[in-house]
Length: 352
Image 1 (cartoon, rainbow, N blue to C red):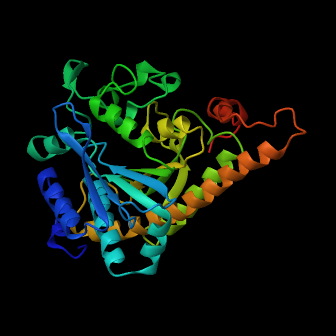
Image 2 (cartoon, helix red, strand yellow; image 1 turned 90 degrees about the horizontal axis):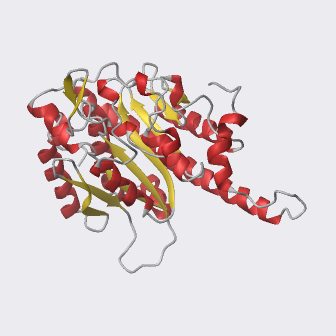
């Protein structure tokens, strides 16, 4: 399906879901649709799709990965890459390609291809450069939506510097104030065996890891492991001389509060790797001819992320195992929550 004419141009949401529904119907053994995992401010359903080789009733211990796109409405290229990846995974599973069958022997993969469905529709009908949700509030004499990538917990790191919040990054009244983010948070945290999350964005060719809300990448040993993970994904994405990604913490771009990747990484106490991938390009508006090459490249990056997520999970298990057996240490029992709120002090001199 990756050779489908669907990928010859960018598509509005109804065409996207028609295409993904067709993929689901054609591949019932591999793809499942979840119709209403969340709901938008304007009442639109936000669906998810699972790609898996697990059979109904089959007892298999698999880990879970999650990828979302278009939390910012104007970032069409990130969405198109995600749709392309979903089609590519199904193509490779149907063809019995080892890289796909081996991957899905270990993982189930969930996708929410359009998070900001109201805003995405608005970019097609009214304003191509619209970023936020359609829950309009008045800011600076104009009406703007809520930035859904500033609306995530925890409370401790939400909107810490309101003076810096401009119209396009208004975070809402409180974490998960928006029905779309609240529903997605409930859905994501209900997933068993969650081992990695990726948030797809446009543009710049950057692999971003937590944190955006301050300098540093997390308490050790987690910060170093995340740095290595990000570097591995960066290498997988840098496939051509003219396509060279960089890997950094989110604060490398600018400090921000309430971001999805920070929120989920903290929620899981640094034990579930979370990345933001800013796909290659130099503008929010990309040529249609770039859809397939960018999609192919991001597919390589996500496959590498899956391998790294598995390694990270084993690393986390070893941390717990080593601590549980170290009975001579006064602090032998690993308190994961301590990692989520002590990383600032332990990395105060580390601004990547």
